[in-house]
Length: 479
Image (cartoon, rainbow, N blue to C red; front, side):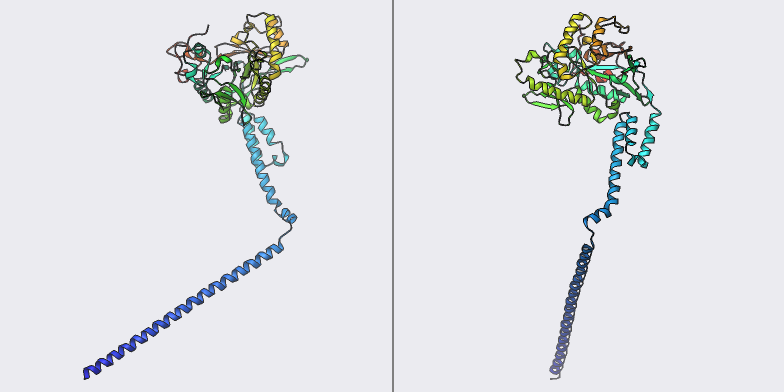
């Protein structure tokens, strides 16, 4: 009996403790829940308070905001500072573009041209730098300037060297694209800088009122070597069709002269398919290869038209677009002139002037005047076909009737061909210069395996690295 009483007593005791703990747990949970609710409510109230303050501040700022005119006045100083900085940066960049082509006078004049910026420390510092460089420049001796030349470049070796009747001619007097680009690279690495033939000498009037030719003032840093470049027969003759050459010259989307080439499927591609655009590409990448924006001389005949356009009267019946082509030629010529290219006569009929009579020369020149000058404009450079000069090594005089006629017709620069490093003759009122052919024949016969004792090219480039091994060898000598 006692056992049962004790058991009931203990059971009642534990039951009371269990209920008490349960009540305590319920109470704690209730308190925690209330605290959480209070905390959430406080967060909401605080958030609304700050949002309200932000909106009120925004309205205050908006209400106090100045009118557009006032705002413009208040922000103008910052705009002026920004515009000035941009203007100075552009000015410095434009000046550097001139200086990199050795036109330090032009760069300095540009920097000093605007009084608003001339006193800026960056501008005055650039001027001082260019003045210092100018003091180190060396005047080039025009009598030691070489002149190199090319014909149309072979763009597809397989088509040019396909064993047909034209292969030997291409192999002798043409240069491949690969060779041309290697020549440019090696001459650039050796410090050569392209100059205009008009930089070498220019026509002026002396104190006595007489027209004379005066040597130019080409100023270059020590170690730089000026040279002239030209290209003959930039006409893309009919016989070259399908043999891996450009077909004509056009104006590119950038306004610069470039070339078309007809592909195997008959489509026409525009790109760097001859000397003009390839040299342009190289100078864009290496602007210090060009003296004050100089480019090469482009020489034309006329008997099939120029630049690949069949504009000669003999094509009037064959070319229904002859008038449109003439207008296209004028646009290309303008692009060439605007981009620094010099233009020259190679005679209308590719005539060997050394052996032809004065009457023949007059007839040929008359055709040039009628059919080419309207497209090309006047030119004062004559590049002799075959390099055949109208005189010997003595200076021209008016006793040479061919010279007298050509001079009176406006020619002042006369270029023959010779393999020596340079030959320049500055006459009283004209300039003569020998050109060096950098073609297959010249390069082949300078290879050590062909002629170990000959060296006509090592001052310009390493012929063993340049010579295109796609060429058929040996290269037959020209007749």
